[in-house]
Length: 320
Image 1 (spheres, rainbow, N blue to C red):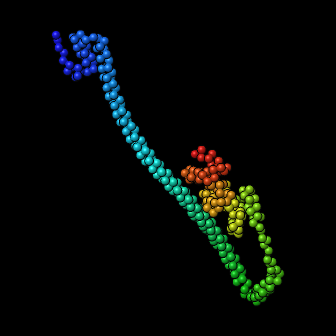
Image 2: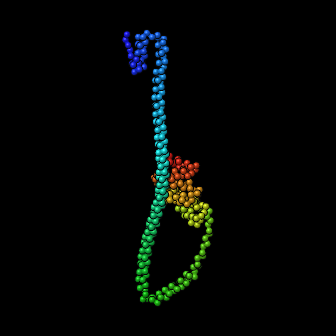
Image 3: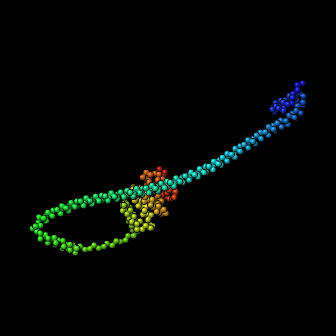
C-alpha cells in the first residue's frame, strides 16, 4: 500500500490540500459522507481565513487612503491660505496703482494748467510787442511829419522875419495868451458819470445770454467778474463750470480741463461736480489721451453710479 505523508497538506495551497485529502481517503477507504462532513468545515475555515486576510488588507488600504485624504486636505488648506495672501497682496498692489494713476492724472492736469499759463503769457507778450511796434512806427511817422512841418514853418518865418518882425511878435503874443484864455473859458468841465451797481443775478443772466449767443470770451469776462466780486456766492461753482464749458465749445480742451479741475477741487459737493468730471473725461478723449479719459470717467461712475452722467460715461467707455 502506498503511504502519503500528511506534511504536504500543511504546506500545500488550498486546492492541492483537497486533492491530497481525496487521495488519502481513497487509500484508507473512508466513508464519503463522513469525508464531506469533515471537508465542509475545513473549506469554511480556509475561506474564513482568506476573507479575514482580505478584510485586514482592505482596512490597511482604507487607512492609507484616509491618511492620503487628510494629507491632501492639509495641502489644500495650505494652498488656500497662500492663495488668500496672494489675493490680498494683489488687491493692495491694485489699490496702490490706482492711487498712482490718480496722482498722475492730477499732475497731468497741473501740467496742462502750467502750459496754458505759459501760453497765455506768450500771447500777452506777443500782443504787447505788436502794440509797441505799432506805437513805435506811429511815433516815427508823427515825428517825421512834425519835423517836416517845423522845417517848412521855420523857413517861411525866416523869409518874412526881417520885414514883419514886430507884427509877428504881436500876433504870437495874441495867439499864445488870448487863445488859451478863450479856450479855457469856452470848454466846460466834464461832469462825473455815476455808475449804477449791477446785481449778481443780473451779471449772471447777462453772462449766460452771451454764452448762448456764442460770445464765449465776453461770457467768461462776466463770469470772472462774479467770482471776483462774490467769491462765496452760491453761483460760484456754476460760474466756474460755465467758464470751462466756454473753452470746451471753442475746442480749447487743455484750458477746459484746467477749469473743470477747479470745479472738482473747490466745489466737490456742488451740483456741477458730476458734469465737470464727465466733460473733463471727454476733453482728455478729444485730445487723444484715452488713459486719463478712462481714469476720469471711471472715477465718475464709482462716485456717482446712479447719475445720468455715469450712464453717459459707461456708454462712452464701451467705444474705447
